[in-house]
Image 1 (cartoon, rainbow, N blue to C red):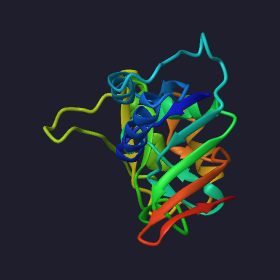
Image 2: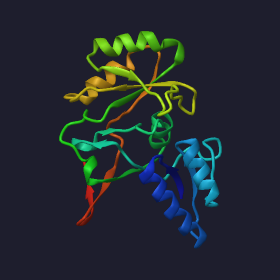
Image 3: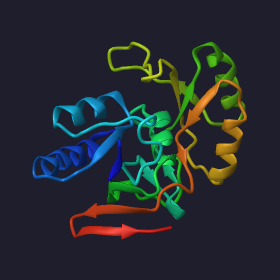
Image 4: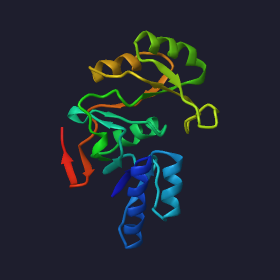
Length: 204
């Protein structure tokens, strides 16, 4: 199978388990959603590929920062939202893996990431403020500005509640200078949600 390998702590655990299966003879090859996941997969001897070699993926597995009704997602807390959306849009099936704390009745408590071209930062910031999304430029803990794998900025938007995710997504995408946003709508096939009682499958 051709697999899309997600980013973040939950996805890292999946990649580590996948590496064990590969050692046992499982035949897969993958495309990673971030440089960190690529490095981890390669360290575990998981065969990697590219979209030039493999234009379609059988399955993508990734985590989420919030899982709302209809499997509407907020992703990108780790900063890989652009590559995640590229990889997951190329997969025939996209499975979300998360713990029960990520299930929400409405999206928006977790800050919504928006990836922005550097030149357009002041313009996009102003437009997001006008939409009431309260954007804040992402920094590392040491105070330096966070840059994505594509060398763009991220504005984290504290919306509080996103009542209409589809409208919010469209409003953000209409802003020139926005590369991508962290609303993943109508993309996930189902979610595997872990709790103390076990793992439950959640569909749309």
